[in-house]
Length: 534
Figure (cartoon, rainbow, N blue to C red):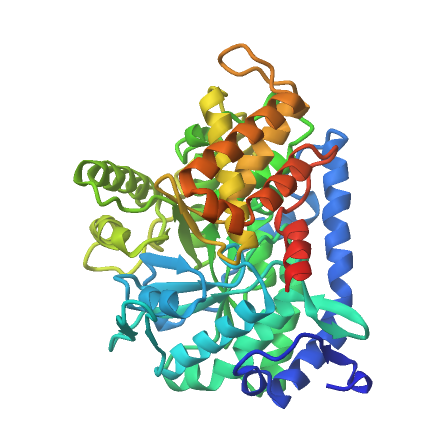
């Protein structure tokens, strides 16, 4: 690409890149960047202004100026047939084998993730888009180079939804007018252009998950992007469909407004619980009375999370949108007794969501699909494909205070050491290119690692005491990090440790945990480290 065209792709070419990034893709991407990229910095600045107000003592609340939207009588445009039954969705990264396994799982939807499950090297971003294109075309296959095992699509795969990166991320390998472009626009453009015709011919459509929205103005930005693309390609308004994750504390107070801004394109909201817990810490980080306990005790039956789940269901169903439940990070075990405990926990978690009225739920491993499916089959019944008929109209109104109520529980040395070990191992894996990692029986992604490091930052800031009576300090964290590094070295062996990214991960973890201000996302400094290695 020449500089005169205002769009420049910097990186060396990946196999298949030329066909993927065709002239049509580049033309659309140039048009999108020309119209919409310049608005993103202001949207991000709005987040900072909001956070500054909260830091000064203005707790989040429902907006007075948009009350008419919350009380108005309106609904979303509608839900395509292949998105009306979403009782189980499996999520995963976009590497080739995972895409095939995700689409073949006993789930209604596979959410292919360019965000929290992806370490966004240029090679992985491009290969991921190629994998999704091949999956849409129906000719994706994979043979394991060591075992020789062959993977291919079943005859009736799950519905495919693409999760793009959040507005805070840039794609540094593509410049427009000399500036790195929003990664969200790149992911959206490449997936849409390469697949929309084939998807529509199959009776499906270009479907997206939108992550980490914080307010309705960001939703309005996405609505303008969708409308522009639909008009440019002579598509019916509402052809592009999206599901928005409500995974930030500010967004839970603007769910009606988000649905309203996107009413032509949106079909559902999703309880992104792990990012939501992280956002609770981040948003209320200056409030010493709202410090969270050990991560393991912050479960969906806690008052502030229960209120979040119930309000999302009530809001969505009032507007004709689906209300998706959150992720079970548990993964099956080869040990029969341990696996029974895992499945019992999954069952309890999914029963809570189904009772609340959610229309479906997320899992991270195919081995949990049957358990989750059985729960939602039971609650949805044979006469329905979702729970839109459950309105929760008889519920008492959920006020702001219920969404902010502190979560009680212990802060333990075991919990702190576990947070450090998980964050360390996850960051090492992320820097090595793998962003979806099984650690201690859980499938960890960026969101869960964020909780681990943000909790410790918060404990240090507010001088919290562990149950042992020890105050959490910078020096205590450094000591435990050093010990965690030694333990991991013993676990993985000298060779793996030496050739891995453990030292770099420890440096990054220490920097973001001991920073004076809470770092917004660990993936931002992490991305800089990836670029340095690229």
